[in-house]
Length: 284
Length: 284
DNA sequence: TTGCTCCTCACGTCACGTGAGGTGGC
DNA sequence: TTGCTCCTCACGTCACGTGAGGTGGC
Image (cartoon, rainbow over all chains, first blue to last red; front, side, top):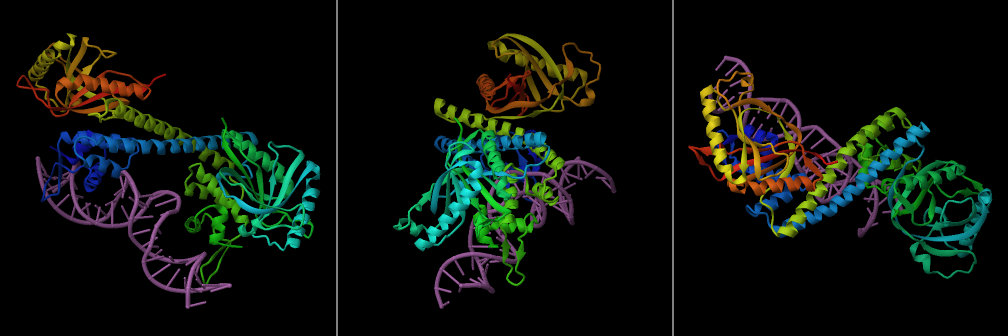
């Protein structure tokens, strides 16, 4: 018979843990003195303690362990198998998350060393929802013509909406359909979120399209505040981040004009708050 | 200006989180209505929220993030670098732990599939402390002669202790010095823990040694309850576990007789509670 | 008026660590 | 008598989730 302190030393655990396990009915002392409350343990109980510590080391919760051990001396095979399989699935996620954190921290450190200062934008991953939109789409010959082209497309879009008596119901956005980053032959779509219910509507004006922008369960997103001229650099930063994470773009890049339409009265509104999103997948 | 619900949807976080960040002074609403307590946020604050979510995704605590963001709009480079380096070190540990958990779970599942039932012992890793001991050591020609040899060594050990007026101060143990598992030419030492202060003592009886058993920062340990005849299987289980973890033995195996001396009055005491320990290192 | 959103407590989660304040055994 | 160990609360940790109970705006 050991007092709690000796038993704790033998089992390499804290006294507090033994009291905790007692309260949870996970490991009751073989005898408790009724007057002093002193807990007494036997060597044989070390086996159970060892089992608890081992299972806990696999990341099982004390509740799960308690369920397993309640069923008697031998572990119930089926239950244990289920638990381990579930735990294995969890561990896969946790490992991926850790690896993402590691490459994220490494990427940031590298950036600090090379650029010497902290980057103006943060990238994070999230899910993006599908969006019902009205849009116009054009191919712009070169990047230099983008400002003028966008202004024209915005004008065209809102004029068409007016003619159709269609009201914007959300954010304005641009979608870049080119597979890779390019500065010529830019296939760009200017869109604005509309009510879901308007999608089926028949149109009278040409050039306007009503459609659903695909969502993605995994996308990289960068939030940017500044002028539109800085967007090129932001796009490159986003794509390079994606590469550093061992991922690749898996769909068109979206540019959400969170602080409102890019043009008001035909003039660019700057600085603006813009979110860049690109669906991604682990590169094979 | 957004109410908290809209801002939460925009930022893909919960309302509760925004209230939490408000309380921590991590992200205060740009305006709070004094009468209703309603919180109002601006689009520009999305950038800060995004930054918080991104840094939190690297596993930094909200406190650490708060410290970084308190220093103004730009992140303080030196402080960020320090934080990231520390986080990187932590992540290395966490990754190793995850990997150990993964191989641990896999090993158990494999065992369940192959053996069809749950194993009688658990293995876990821990540190083992150096121990001051008195001991006798012999080479035993074959495993079959072990019981008799051990009995003889125990008798010899305690007789010598008696003659030296040396009192055991702890557990009895056996140490197996052979590099690999073998069943012939077993180099075995029977020892008992003594007071640290007795180590320097001069001896009058031959065959007895006073020494310190080396400790190890990392060891695999298996706790076993049963007869001594089952020990061979337990040793094999321990060594095979070590191999499955991608590790290798890095020192002699110890066998601790936790439930007391193996022999009392020249007879084996069974069942016994025995801990097998072997120092290990990651295999290269 | 009816939903919908917002508010402030405040408890629950998980596995303990860490005192505070007091007692028992050698 | 002095340490040492033991005891029972009960708060702290971390980042929120989840009600309870009530209010404000359309």
